[in-house]
Image 1: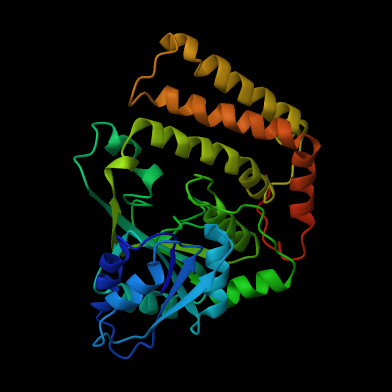
Image 2 (image 1 turned 180 degrees about the vertical axis):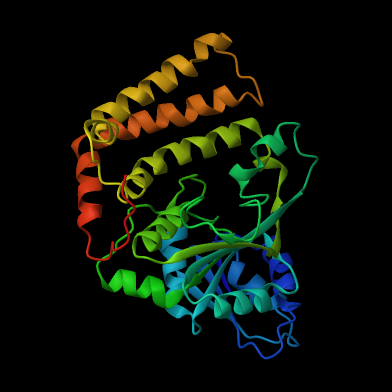
Length: 334
């Protein structure tokens, strides 16, 4: 179990309480807490909260480079076992989490990434629009039933993502270097978990979902605002420009239409249309309307357009280089 924590002293005890209750007889496991540039005594709070009667040890390691991706890299380097569960400091896992992860990963050797169901626990009553957007908070089900989501959904949420470490190690040894960094402090950047999933998919591994894996995601009232949600959508828009490369790489163009659809100038033109025509704020009189999906999509597509303008020719090069990567072995044409 890997917990990446930044200034988590007020909430880390609750997350550790659920981990300490695990019922996993015969399964060797541990908890590695990565203290990611915290200044509030997170490490001491964690060590003080871990009961001496717990069936697994807790180790605290430090990662001074701020950012979720850096913290997860450190956690994976420190981990001693093959299966790694990424659990955030506001995630409360079910009592059978460790046992279920071990059972599923043992039974599915072709699976590199495993995800489950996440239920919301909120500090305050959620706004009326929350249920429509709960998947943006990594809450809910990730598929209609348990099974292979490799080529349907293609990823699972980073919170509660379970990873076969040897699969990622092979990817890195073959030259894989992620481009996305995930969250850094209060900056709502995103996508590093999706990039890992999509890279492993290109390398030939499977991604699996099983709702038997259950956990709760606690959200304070500050995250349940419309402005916070729009900030997340802007982060998604920025990250998804890079994730485009992984979406197009398995589908080499075989006619003029598919070649056009994968070109930077065509995608940028579409983003302009989506942002300033389909979801234009002019239609709302520039008023913010909480719960308005078009307003959220405007934030998303405007940010995507800005990122595409920044990348320019690197967009086409990114797709080409990814197709040529030595670790990218599995393609689906057309």
